[in-house]
Length: 282
Image (cartoon, rainbow, N blue to C red; front, side, top):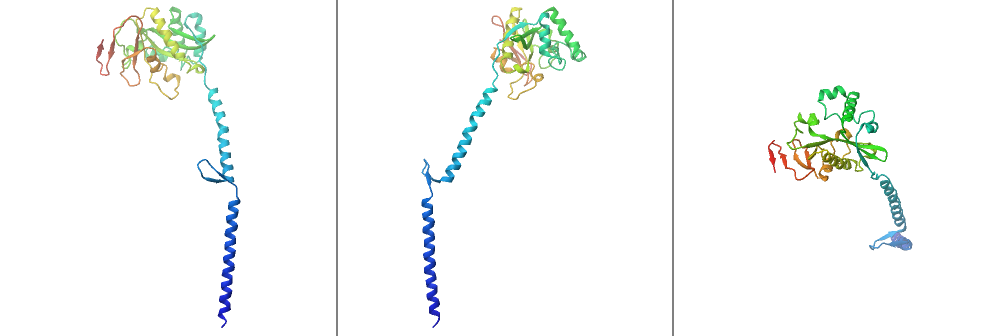
C-alpha cells in the first residue's frame, strides 16, 4: 500500500514544524527576557524606550515653568508715591498735561456734571476747557495727584449744589443732608491705573472737603467689574473703593449706580432712600 509512506512523511513534517515553532517561541521569549526593562515605584514594567519617552516629556514640562514665572513677575506694576495738591492756576498746565488734547475724554474737561446737557455739548472741547479754567481762577474745583513731578490723577470735589446735572437726574437726584459735598469724577493716567491712585485721591478729597467746612461727602461709583473697561465708562470710580474708605449706601435707584455717603465730622444723621423712593432717617 502506498498511502502509508505519505502518512509517515506528514507525521515527520508535523514533528519538524512543531520543533521549529517551539524553537521560535523559545527564541522570542529569550529575546523578551534579554530586553532591558525598568520597574516604576508603582510596580509596573516599562521598556527602555517608554522610559526614555517619559523622561523627555518630563524634562520639557519642567523647562517651561521658569519662563512663565519670570513673565508674570515682570508685569506687576509697583505702587507710586503720591503727592496730592488742590488745583490752582499755577498748576493749570499740569492738568492740561494730564488731560491731554482730548480734555480727559471727548472734550469733557470735567464739566459733564457741572453744565446742562445742551450747554455741555455746545462747549465740548475748547468751550469746556475755558469754563473749567475760569472756575479754577475763583477756587480749586478738585485735586491733582503727582508721582514725583508728573501729574497722574484727578478728582473733582465741591459742594453738591454746583453739580447741576444731579438735580435733574432720576437716578442720582440729591438725598437730603447738611453741607453735603460730592466727588463725582476721577481721571487717572493710563500708565498709573491699578496702582492705588483713585484710593489716595478719595482719601485726600475727604480731608479737603472737611477742611472747607463740609459735613458729609458722597460719590456715585460704578459696580466693580473683573473686565478692564474704558476710562469713560468708570469716571465715577468703583464701588469697592468708596466702601473701603468708609462710605455707605444711602440710595440705589438703579442697580448699576448707587449713592454712597460718608460723614466727615461728628456723628451725622443717617438718611437713606429705598428703591421705592421712601426716606428713612436714623
